[in-house]
Length: 464
Ligand code: FAD
Ligand code: 2HG
Ligand code: ZN
Image (cartoon, rainbow, N blue to C red; front, side, top):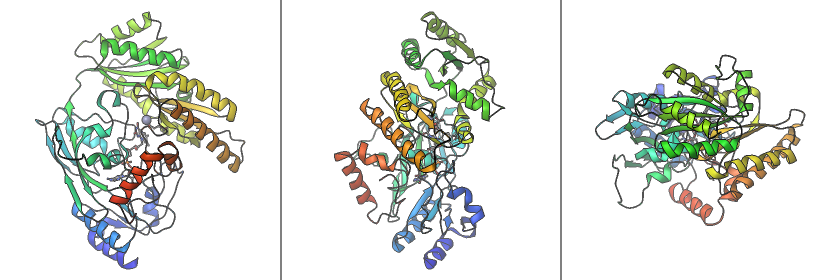
């Protein structure tokens, strides 16, 4: 091991590694503090060639590598295990925007570019990169692709998977797959990039990507809407789709309890309503230059008795404040204490049924639990998070938590849904992959892992 560590330090140079436990602390703990690991060394290569040489050296020494982007992932996939033998590979210094091609609506970026910087580089040439999430100031595009991140604009633009035109990937033996093509049409064999997107660092290390850009959406309008029950959200969505099929940029469902949590733990947040309503929708539409578009849409919806109240942002600053409330929900939960995260999806039309039956699961298995439900309901993705009652002893909490999680995942699966809609599998959801993707699907996943990483050195112990 000693010889390998010296070799890795020589590859990345003095600015590219650390083994200082204090400096490493944030890289060794998942952002909620749920999982903590150890490493003998963190390397931060500054080029694809350095990544390739690091991986080759580790492969020769049969030492495992854990790729890490912004370490904002929700499933503890980016932290090493506690054996103290896994090398941590940070992509943070691989952060150049290599090219922005406005005419081709594409850009080439390195994996360690922070998502907000990618958005900004597109904006600088009047183009739009639509991936947007609460962690965009610190997550990296490589991490976004490795987790197939979703976020708030999936309803119109799709997940990270739909936004990648090409990838550059370092494989488990150190060879480099150069797929940095910026083509919209390419049917030459298998679409290999899709195998790496969503693979959470277990099949290869993404070093760069060609991203798909869009025209800027132009004027948008944002509204926080109070509704009577979760079913009204689904009805409102289908009502809006009648007139605004292709202009709904975001449609988020938010429960009253999450709003109270934000008010309690983030006193600076500017909540849109003084009164408490049962549920809310945060809606953003592209107005196509019609300043009345949102008002007209909401008036229509009010006439159909779908909404109780609404606040329409008067300008970009007010819209930003409404989004700040939405984006602070994970942090409010973190401050509120430990919770079980369930990042599920179901077909949109079955959302209300999931919520009703989910309530019944909680009432039966954990009546004192607190439900924190919100999510990207336009995509059928709900964060059905549960705070455990404080009076349970640790072992009881674990057993009760596992029972609740299993019952909720069974419920989602029974409704044609997924136990993992947008955060991936990592460590925390690994026990469930075989159960819900068993049989042929799981066997094929294992074949892929075996074919691409036969020595199991890429993020072992994660996903599969
Ligand atoms: P990391 O956490 O560093 O890594 C995630 C996984 O990808 C790990 O398995 C890691 O090994 C692997 N990995 C990282 N980089 C690479 C690479 N270059 N090559 C190969 N593997 C790699 N997620 C959503 O989908 N939607 C949301 O709306 C959303 N909102 C969030 C809000 C907050 C406040 C926070 C804290 C998180 C949120 N997330 C959301 C989760 C998280 O931001 C995403 O999963 C994000 O894509 C992770 O990016 P990262 O760079 O932090 O990756
Ligand atoms: C979001 O939609 C993220 O804000 C995080 O996916 C959800 O913290 C969560 O559970
Ligand atoms: Zn989300």
